[in-house]
Image (cartoon, rainbow over all chains, first blue to last red; front, side, top):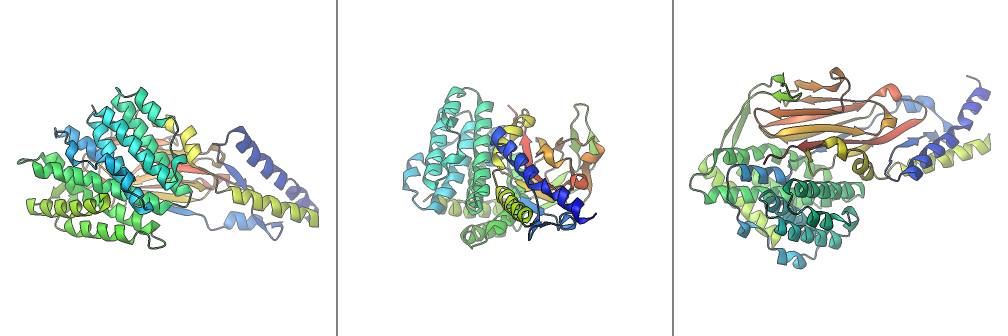
Length: 305
Length: 144
């Protein structure tokens, strides 16, 4: 390729890039694709683009508190509002750390009340989370119509659950995209702790707790590892040291829990979905449950105080 | 020639700086519908990727829940290949063997930690390096 051809090819690059960029943005601000041209000292280096080191993103994710609330409901647990964080406390959380932690705690409580069809309470808890989000300066993450949508769908549990999940998903996205991923990690960690607090409190209050509930509590050992990785990955300025220490304590409490899995086999079902086989064997003693319950309760008390 | 260099530099700078614009709104407008009746998890796992880029997410999936794993990506970057692997590294699903499906509906006999690995197909690599949002979404069917 001679210099003239190169010049001809690159002449239109900036125009093409700008047209593509602004046509996306002007057509719809939600369309986030762009065309990125690599320019080195004014020259387009085609080889640099094609041979560039590619991005490798690694995410860690934990099941939402709603999943824990769902298992509580399925095992026939009785709804107990005394376990929840008092909504009146929302005004007492003044530091960003407390606000973020209790955004997670109230979010898990919100899932719990919604799964148990306590729909009016769900709206109150959603208002609490909105208040904390406002105080944290992340109210943009919330849909302005969200409370109204909840009120409109107050008798439809599935719609409520969908609105709650969507709200927290968008909050998480907003935090991560605005360099506040440490706040996101606090919300996720505190939500996970609150979900486990509710489950262990309910299990301990029952003389003969449901085996599926005990199994799910024990299986949190797996989620805990993902959560610790998540916290580590966002702890760039040591802002999450306290949370990391809390999770270390829970990790220690889970030390005696053993989980083993059989090899997975895969089966296509008639409804088009896939069943991944392989049982998981879990062992957790009553004593270990008591230790986990105590440690989680202490950490949770610290978060909501 | 000098003028072209300056224009190119400015355009490159402008476009590059816009590369960090919001992925959130793309997901909101383009991905929610594809989840159907599945309630999405509350963790956002998304990033701007280009052809050839890779991403992975590790997550625990519970026994007997019904899940939808959805890879929602901007059409401009082309196909996204993804695989689901168990902890031993065994591939349980590969969308390149399933007509390049963007989702995988599944349930598990036992609770497991699974890893989702994806790569934006390098086929779209070009001098114009397209970059678009890719979100890894997990939804769960709510039982009564």
